[in-house]
Image 1 (cartoon, rainbow, N blue to C red):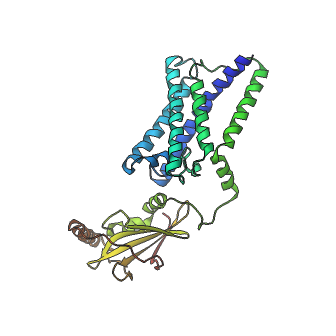
Image 2: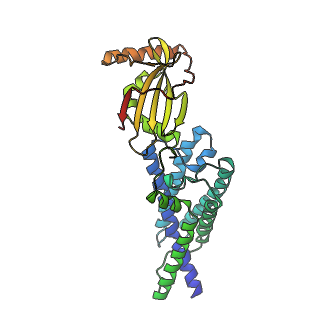
Image 3: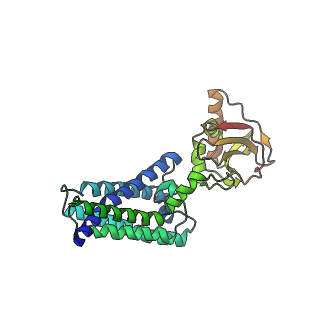
Length: 321
């Protein structure tokens, strides 16, 4: 009886691991869709060079999806034997590698979250996060020699198995910071002055607004020369020109999760004064303006230095998209 219960409990780990893998992949994908940034906030990708973060993030999400589907596909008589053992071994190795990656991430970037479940995993990595990953690795490796999933033969076995699985879920919930953060978010909304929003997320939100579409043609570069935050606003300064002089196109993005308010202004670099927008209302005028900017960029115009435009009045406004 005890051996049968251990076998049933081991078999119960297979759908649980599959649900965690598929759930982690889904939440990461939702974050990418919302932020338009593949590598934003995906935890251990911060250990890689900037140019490799997006490919590594995509690779990890694909691996999680394939292993989750593979665990479910090999849980019955279909695919039993060697395929099932390889899938479960790969799952255990994935969680084992993730454990060591989280240990390294905590020492290198103690402020970064694990990124295990997208937006729900923004809390810094702690010993509980590492313990959860190690326990999941052990659970996956322990299922390697198990056969297809079978149902309990007796009602008392089913009740005992249910209680054991519930106890396991309680333990996982206790060591998972995502549960605590989710419960806090239900009953509390932080003031915008204290809200944590990544610069990449604000920049992605800016790129989706009408203000960006209206003024992006005035930029000599789409890479900001300066980024700073003041209370509820994050400012992005981009190089531009005005009447043959260097200028800065400054966007202010309010730190909101959805449809942020965006303000913009064109600032003279030398004087710091707000200048009027160029009269580029017609298509031909805008084409001439873009041609002038391309000529200045081809001749190696100097980048715009930092501007003391933190408190400047914004002359155009856009409420979201």
